[in-house]
Length: 305
Ligand SMILES: O=C(O)CCC(=O)C(=O)O
Ligand SMILES: [Fe+2]
Image (cartoon, rainbow, N blue to C red; front, side, top):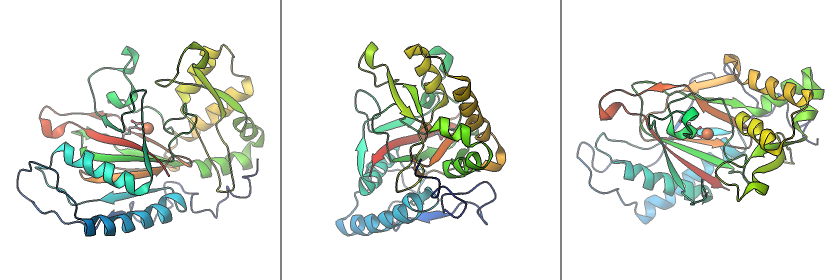
């Protein structure tokens, strides 16, 4: 473990619910809404000048806040009720391309995934992004050889009720365990079997072995999705040791405690950018209304920097 000195309370990536004086800061992108109040037929094309100044702004916010700072940022663009979802897809792709390379989120290579309640439940085989469940805080793509560095979550519409975004700092958890239970921290630095859900090429490749924590010269790194680890060990037919179980449940419990979590609700046109190496994310459960304007609809993109 070469990360111990990096995972400490002076790191900007160390925070909890009460760390930020005001509610989470929003960065307003230098764009104007050209067709406010009108129904829109096509996404607004960005001029070369606009694209260049936007890329500068986005690059500096992502470097300062997401890569080297607290590990997340909210970018906001002017939004009008009549905007279509295709506009947000195009803008999310444009923003993602300013940060790095978009990566596929399934075997088919989809780069923008719609996160909305399909009415199906996870018990019926639906994936998390197709349900209205809260799920537990996690990182995305821990079953990939190279998980995405960044996640973009763009809000197209809010739910009638719930659907708040939740974030927790893995740097803070790492420090907490280092101080209270270094033995459990050491266990999380050892390998686990992750279910390769959605990406496995066959029976032999149905799990991927990797530690939950892997740190480097850039600091703490986490890959964690509780259910994928439980399923991975089941598939590999290798039971978790009691120390592994205890270490995973300490992480799970810590991610449930309110004081470790910041929470906010994204507004239409806002894009949450998350450092997927150091910040766990999730959401509260939500309930859609009866009218189309009250159906929660988010877009998710994965980026390698
Ligand atoms: O719905 C959200 O806000 C988050 C969804 C999510 O974490 C995911 O689809 O991986
Ligand atoms: Fe996620």
